[in-house]
Length: 403
Image (cartoon, rainbow, N blue to C red; front, side):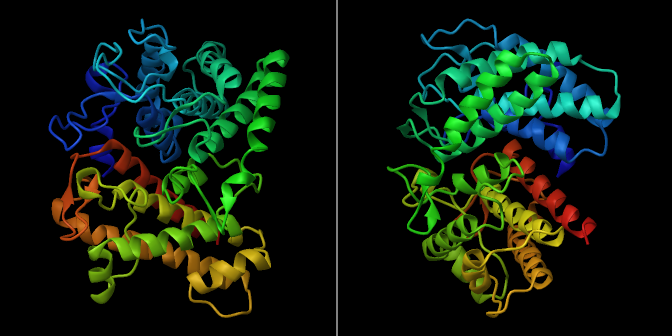
């Protein structure tokens, strides 16, 4: 899977990440660089790499790509930073109609570049200087700091709101990391502005926990984008941690939704295959409304991260265990080690069910799995699918390394 993932990165030496090398999907061609997918995929590449040097060529090319596209002319009368996608390999803005603006992109891209800069510094590797990277990073974060309340499109590019949980949680992370990075660069003015904005974003998050789960938006409450957010926007500060009651209630709610929605989940359970396949949201009808590989893997990653959290000293409170305990098939008496083992076991179950449906294709990962037959479908070799599965496997290893 990593080999297939790498084939989609740094296309033609341009630094672009192709969403999928597939020109004929239910949504049309995926042969573009999506700003969101690219940032998340490059961060996954770094997270799962054995060293900075292993991914240095891809990151140096990506830095060049970002430098180019941040300065592209925008034909749509909006800041180019919030464009959804770009042509490969020249980096020009996609000229057709699309859901715009997409306000999560700048923060996700800045987060990836900050992680890269910090990894380079920690390894003493010789590559792009932090000063060069800082210019790219603050170009994105300056826009985020000033515009985080602006209305835009959701993760799935379908609906509009000024208050998506995915946007808020990942933007908070970007601004918080940006504030720390700005301070290291000696830019105290930006550090202060980013910190202030991050605190303001954080103040909106608790309102998304309602009726026992975290909802994505008022117009689309039950949405697995929240699971991705809990992975990609977490800051290790305890706010909506993977073992929290908020995460537990969200998993419980989405489990009930997708177990009842998909015949393949019911058939797999009847056949004794553990786990569950997750789709996008309640009422999804894109390409028939199916489970998605990346969302299923995101659930597995969340479970492994929760297991690691407990195995490294965190204690689950009674409110969280009241939900996690029944979900994991545990008794009334909480034990940290037992709960961690059960969470990791649940993560293994999710990956086992996913593996069942992709192994016959040689572990090529499509976008979706047919809700009835269980066969892979839609976009072939989706980069985001590889990114999330590889992150889940990496998080699994982190759990076992923590024991």
